[in-house]
Amino acid sequence: MVTADQLQRLKIGPEWVDPLNQTFDRFGITLPVQQAAFIGQCGHECNNFKTLEENLNYRAATLMKLWPKRFPTQEIANEFSGNPRKIANKVYAGRMGNRDESSGDGYRFRGRGCIQLTGSTNYFNAGKALGVDFWAEPDLVATPKYAALTAGWFWSTHKCNEASEAQDWTRLTKIINGGVIGLQDRINHINQAIAVLSS
Image 1 (cartoon, rainbow, N blue to C red):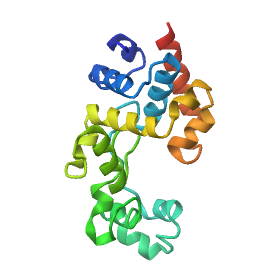
Image 2: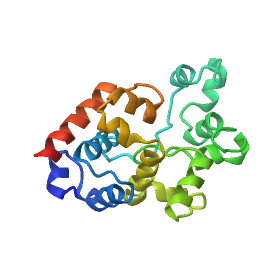
Image 3: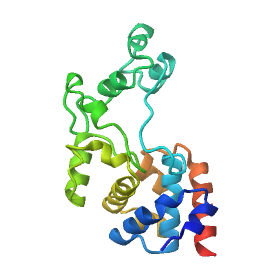
Image 4: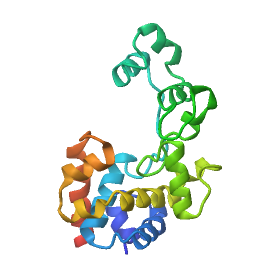
């Protein structure tokens, strides 16, 4: 069980005690190294448990850099610049179970939670596993309880405990991120959590 004191030492609010312990219990994240890895990876993903919704407020130049195929020209990128709803509907259209751009699924099922749950299929499957209709109420994933539980569902379905036990932080980061973005920051978060949870 993680305590409010331990979380405070990691600069995480006390409102996360129950959600994290529920998640650890439900998904068998029981060893201190597994819990520390979960806290560390989530800490990186959601700004130390403070940001539970994807920020899609990008300028044109950033859009062209992040999604060069979707925003091939300055003119196209300018149309979407600073409009998170429009950006999400374009970049997530026709992927992860989402319908076309006009359906609004991209924005409706944008990244939320401690490990950015994204896409209609993931919202449906996580909801089915947890017995909650996230497809009908996607904003629930941006509350501490379900932000943690959906991250636990992802963790479990992607066998993240194994990479954690091996302390293979590169492999764990690739599972969660698809690449190694922010690897050193993730490792720093994990090491801090190991130190606190082991003391």
